Image 1 (cartoon, rainbow, N blue to C red):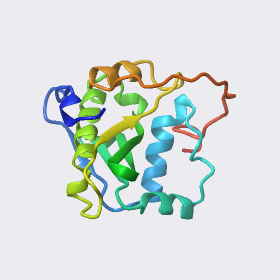
Image 2: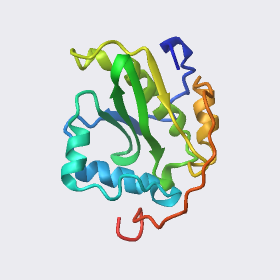
Image 3: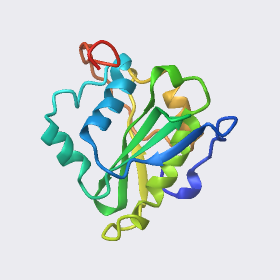
Image 4: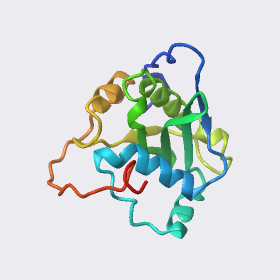
Length: 176
């Protein structure tokens, strides 16, 4: 996405029970909970071997933000940004916990996440304005992920094919 005008917003879920808030205090425990809970059944593994110190180092980088959707106080999903040079923001993680999928939360969470990526420099004065927001997905992501990205205005840039073995993940059960 190369302009905020590219965003095609999704409607908020019905009712007013779902809110989206920025997790302003970096917490490796909370971030790992979100990561393992959202990605456990779809085989997210790249961060599972990180130490607590490595989680802290990642989360405390200027411009890294985590926005969390809550349904009546319960975490339902999240979006995490990784700011890159030259005004580029990558959405590195986005998804919903299994019990919250299919409830019209994902489109709205992605909408709000993309909006926050575009206005990232307003919260980080040393950061140049965002000029591009991007993400990557794979066949292991949820079956509606790509369609959601495209409905929000993302355009396919590149496709690669590689094989990765499915490895067991610790969450959300057992051992989350």
